Image 1 (cartoon, rainbow, N blue to C red):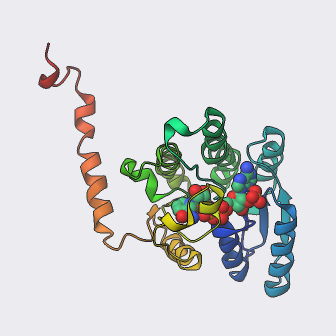
Image 2 (cartoon, rainbow, N blue to C red):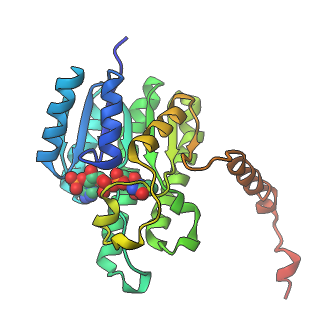
Length: 259
Ligand code: NAP
């Protein structure tokens, strides 16, 4: 059986380029999306030469609606594509009061809007045919307001929630949805976000991170957190969250809010 093609956003470098390498070596054709066409072309010809798979390049700025629409159309119409990797994303340096509103808006357009729109473009087709996968790259930062990367973390919390919700809806229809939550990983992201080289935390190497995420993918794990050694902590967290659900059905406020 032919393996499904994989459309990867943010494939010109970092985590996305590493996913491209790994899926090419697994024999999947690729569609690579990012803004830098020259870098995409270079990666595409390298992977074609090394693995023999077909690699298409689809340059697009995912914060530009016209360019986004072209990627959406590809996801809607190209039946060879069975896996979407929603990876393109960026960080934003500084504290909230120092971040320009336009920069906050641009970050949301890339990290939230593009992720939701591309999932929305592909999900109906995958659900109708009853297979395929959506991999969404969230971040451990989305679980940790204490890190102070407030807007970035909020965008990644959105990606986690979106993935969990989509997994509940699409899983029974045969479509696998995975949220991947890397923590600090050595890529260009930090420099692009204006991080001071001297203050960078210890980092995981990108190849190790993606290989761990793919182990989670292969076992059809819903939420994959490569740096979390004690995986039971995540299960405990989910159990605690679900234990609140009955309370959300109460029709009177809790006694602590009595006037
Ligand atoms: P990266 O090395 O900076 O790569 C980001 C990728 O996104 C590049 O291919 C970039 O390519 C593309 N991109 C950026 N803006 C875009 C736009 N407007 N339209 C289309 N593509 C765009 O970062 P990375 O670390 O690999 O990050 C990948 C994902 O992992 C992100 O979602 C990030 O939030 C997440 N993550 C990273 C870390 C980490 O520590 N590195 C940790 C947790 C989560 P062009 O510049 O060519 O467009």
